[in-house]
Structure formats: C-alpha cells, structure tokens
Image 1 (cartoon, rainbow, N blue to C red):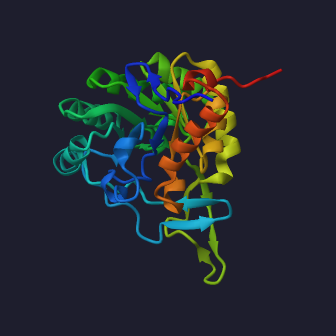
Image 2 (image 1 turned 90 degrees about the vertical axis):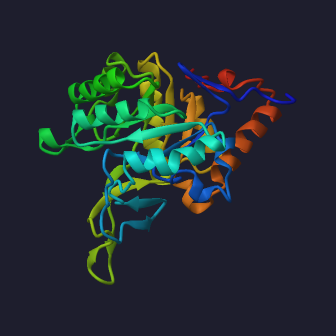
Image 3 (image 1 turned 180 degrees about the horizontal axis):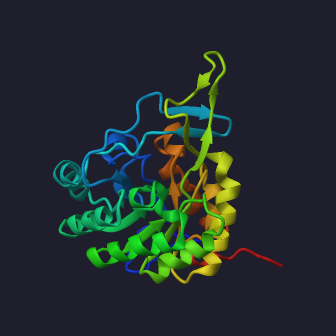
Length: 307
C-alpha cells in the first residue's frame, strides 16, 4: 500500500496541491462555507462568476430540485470587480486559498477589462472564462456557441491577463471539440467542462414553471454521463490539461472523470447537499490510490483502457 500518494496536479503554468476544485457558483467566495470546508485544503476555489459591475441576478424562485439534479437560474448575481478585490479576495489570500476567478461579460471588451483588472491583483492564480454568457453584439447568442466567438474572447483575455487562462465550455454546441480547439489555438492554458444544461421544471400544483425565469441550468448526477463523454472527447483532442465536472457527487465519480482524461475535477452541486463534499471526495480519491498502490495522480489520469 502506498503511504502517501502524490496528489499534486500540473496545469501548465499552475501547479495545484491536489485535483479537487470547488466549482464556480456553488461555493460562493469561499467564506460562506468555510465553517464546513476549509477552502485552503482544496486544489483551488473557483469563485462565483464575476462581472465588471455588480449584477442583481434573476428574481426568485431561482433554484429547484429535480430528479437526480438541480435546476438554477440565479442569473449570474455577483458583487462586481471592485467589491471582489476589496471585500472578498483579501480574505481568501490571508487563508492561503488558491483562487481561480470565473469571469463573465456581454462583450469581448468587458471580458478583457475584467482580465486587466484582475491582472493587477495579488492572489489570483488563474482566470476561468465563462463563455456561456450572451454575446450582446451577436444578438444574445452565447460566446461559446461558435469557435470564432470563442477564439475572439479568449484571445482578448489572454492579451489582457498576466495569469494562466482556463476556458469553461458549454455543452450546448454541436461539436464541442472544435470549440475546445479554437480556445486552445487562441491561447487557453486549460480547458474546463461542462457548464450546466438548459432545462425546465413545472410546478404542477400552481400550473406554472417552477423557476421565475422559466428555464434554468441543470446540474447534478443527471448530467454526469453527458459530461463524461464530452470530457473524454475533448481530452483526446487538445494538448492542454482538461478539468472535468458535471454531476460529481462522490470520489468514485471524480475517479471516473480523471480516468477518461481529466487532470483535475470541479465539484459543484454536491456542495449544496453536503458542504464537506469537496473534501470528502479528495479524501476518497487519496484512499483509493493508497488501497490500489497508485503512487501519484498522473498514473491514473487518462489511463482508461479502451481495448
């Protein structure tokens, strides 16, 4: 039995102590769940999606539980760049948290301005670009819906930022591999996937949509098989590290994502069920490696037997 497996992860320009990240939008700014899960023990915390100015989000109800999943239409509510740098980031830095900032905007210019603003801050280890946002100039179509729009926003952020860049892909495209390759060619250091899947729930008693916004993003165990397939496809097609996510609730789920080619994983909806889930998943991966004499993460990642 391996006494202590090496759980460190090489994400190109950034090395993490372990492969478990808290996914954006599910762990707040780290402080909210710190009484249950020390964010400094995780590989990184991807903080709540950040825009240039504060966004109010959608009116409630905006979260509903569904069969094998959760549906949300938060509407990207966040405090904005200025408040994040002043009120949120210092707390994370003081506690030694590896911070990844998820950014969003309605134009390429907004994304670039955010990257430039974060570039001046100490303690931001990586920027994750959320390309599921509506491109206002393109009539509301998500940036990630086409390889061309993806490349434009990634290139602009790469030129404005000093940190490594991770690009989070939406599953709502006909060919996710093409979009991933466009992001890499534009300068992305890491690819993460998947974001939520648009879906709907109905309040039968009141004969209304369960969400005020009608449509929201589906996450949780229901989307795991879809996410696994897409992570596997993208990991084979790009030369940069891939971070997988989508329905990871247990260590076994995480091990599957690592096996199909992910270098690290993002845990999201599980934190709503149990705020300690990211740490439990990390402990479970390490226990599995010890039990099976796997000395380091790199031996397991991408070792799926296809014969």
